[in-house]
Length: 431
Ligand SMILES: [Zn+2]
Image (cartoon, rainbow, N blue to C red):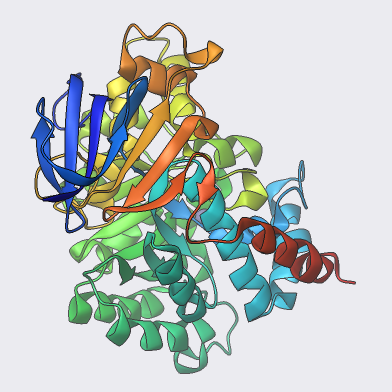
């Protein structure tokens, strides 16, 4: 007998362009999708999804989740002073308890708005990993190596020490995984990249990087290396193993071809890039070049939310605006960014991102019984152009319900908010 049956649903399985299944049942057994069809096999729990759209849970491929403690703390600053005068001094003050508080609050927001898995680059990841386990989400966690200054010592770098703790415990499989990370081209040297890359080869894990986020970063790299940041990373072997690169706002055509050829995924972060005035990544050109483009929120200090529905809609709109072509990045393609492409970027293509037999039951149910979702001619278009994160009524990860009707089952939201307000906020403010 099945554990759960979701019946009478409109399903967007994300297995082929435009496919929508009406009057569909989805059966869940042992955390996997065990039935898809029009019948109603017996199940311990039956959920009637009439008036709801069921689709794969969303994947946030670039986040600094704990930065939730800095939501709204530094808005409307130029990027350099945002980073050096506001963010870095706060990060120097944040302790493990404050970071864990931010991560838990961020996960609560992600679960509420339909995200099931996230790629996260931040500090104190061994402690955060325990919270991810408790929350029941999936995550690819890393702490990025930032090798600034002449006295930099790889072995005493906090990020290196943490990565060495994480790698043997969380490898390249399972719901929680260790990724490794080079913060960016401009914050380290090829010698450091090669040491980090050794881990990728040894453990078979994904390397996360920031890539060509700002024009200054991109142009200075060309002056320094005589080539773009992407070409420099490739030259020193970083792209010999799977890489997930955030932003790619200033990528050139030759970079796009390189990333496609080397199988590098790009996490498009439109809200953050717009808010920090960094520019707009040309994802329709990337998709045409064959790059696996996925979506990220980036940190909440530059977003200021973790609701991926904003990124989904914006990614379609910006592509149309940039190319002056309303057919650029269709609604279905925008949904692919947030589901199947994100799964591929996380090394989870055979595990999540689609509703298909044998995959993990990582899915969400969207309530369409609202004025802003009425009428529904095309469920895919409704999700992309009209839905919001708050329309998600159920979030399931590996067959386990993490949220139903707005109530979280694994996180005490009130105490998570209180911990951020009472413990983390005074640290952020420097009180
Ligand atoms: Zn970032």
